[in-house]
Length: 343
Image (cartoon, rainbow, N blue to C red; front, top):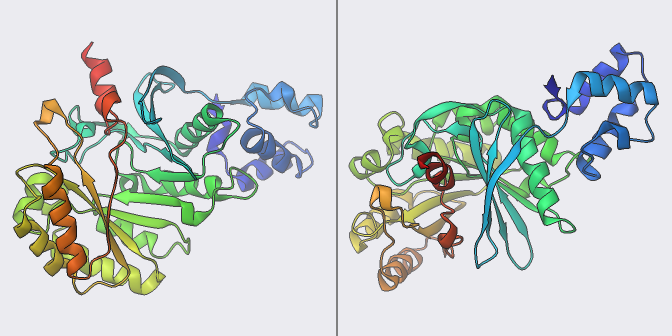
């Protein structure tokens, strides 16, 4: 049985026509699913009874099942879900004073095997479908009710641009005024630097945010941290970023996880300034590493972090320091799944 969240509004309208139903029922169904959070076709009382029966016979709603959740003292919540085929995937809610951010996964596992990330430790299993991605958002919206998810970041497990078509289909539903209705500038796609995906994204005509995981400013160190750099090295990545900014007029955020004894020295900061000095419309998001015992990862001392940031600022790079969230609940990507599967 197909999950109805797999369908765009246009696809649902096409089904209505094929079923010889009124086309406007498609928007009514979207409203029930995405605005009212309906989990049962029977509650869609403005639809004809015969149509509700057809929908029940052909489609399911919210196939994912909650396996485990944990809540941090800072309000961050992490969820482990089982999909229809029993594969496991994680999502995170990050509340703050003026927003509620959902961190969404796009794959089961990850093939990119970044050395600081638990997501790839058990390898790659498969891509999520667009419906599975959307269902993460639907579930999290239920969790924060009566508040609503205000921001979406595709920064969970997996490489979003490696699952390009499903992610973009999900983005359009999440962004649609007929569905979840989250503004495009409040949707961020984070990539490890998959150049073909960045090039395609530049042509989409969407004002979504692009975030690139950088984490090192020279090829030797970045390749050690991120094997993807051997395929898409820094020189090519930075040239791609220049072209992206030129085509879209959009700012790029570079994510930089500060790892003790590895990439947090003054020398690393100097290399970073040199690498990015020619780019306009960029900012740095500095992230103290989450402690991951399995990977022997630790954050630097506070003073080293502040000195690193100060050097970037002094040389004209706009840099922000992200406050660590959810450390007490293993909120880094892949950790909850890893702990669960070890049992």
